[in-house]
Length: 292
Ligand SMILES: NC(=O)c1ccc[n+]([C@@H]2O[C@H](COP(=O)([O-])OP(=O)(O)OC[C@H]3O[C@@H](n4cnc5c(N)ncnc54)[C@H](OP(=O)(O)O)[C@@H]3O)[C@@H](O)[C@H]2O)c1
Image (tube, rainbow, N blue to C red; front, side, top):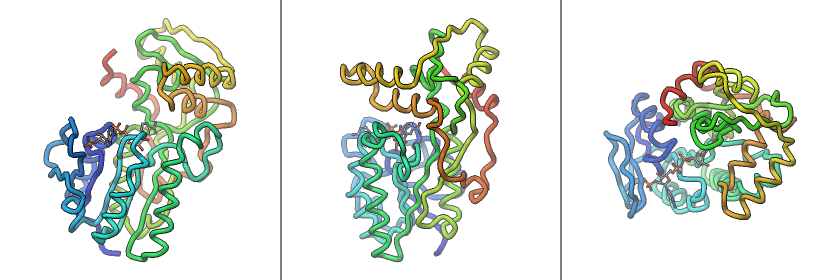
């Protein structure tokens, strides 16, 4: 397979999109953004923006979608247009837990559109040897700790909700780590073709994060212990009343409940030449950039 040079990104102005574009540009890729006609956002500097599918995909080697979670079912037109334009590699908007093996029924239901899209890519690449795909599982965005009650920690009120023992290890990755992983995938197209890869920034626990937060933000954190089942039950009630984001409760619970979290496949860090992140260093950098 020839080298990838030109990359179209869907969702270039988004949470992952901005660091992704930076990482792709730093790795020498030429980036074009495919954006919605009525998009209110502007993609990062140095990126050519196209609103029409054909124009955005003609002459491109790869399509990377980092479209928002709720629009992951809307990726089929891009995929079909990319195949028609002869795009060689498609990276769908996955970037969470491994949707190939998701064990939690609530999350499985929530992730149906992602699951079906990877099935579709598998089918299409089976029919067309020139088309390849790579799915990326990075577990949880570490940066989510800055928002609301990410991982059970509310930075504003210094309240920690510890699920089960708090000692359950789970994987997190900063947005910049995930962005580098995508650039590494596109830099090694042969090694990464038609695979669902798991990468890991670092492995941590709620108790480890709480200890670092106590040291870095002052010791006066209030903690509440909750059993995972109870936490989910309360979250489901809130979800039904529309007072919490659909994925928040399940994700926090999924990451921290006893026996739930570890990825089922070994990380592809080595394959991609990615060094693990240091939990404390990464958390300190996130805290420094947080507004609370
Ligand atoms: N692992 C984790 O913890 C975690 C956390 C959050 C997200 N994720 C995953 O990461 C991927 C990217 O998510 P993200 O949070 O970076 O996305 P985001 O910032 O919410 O949105 C990315 C882009 O999607 C485009 N878009 C298309 N249709 C849209 C619509 N109907 N509403 C809003 N935006 C729309 C927008 O680009 P234009 O305006 O240019 O069209 C937007 O900038 C998703 O697969 C998501 O599930 C993972």
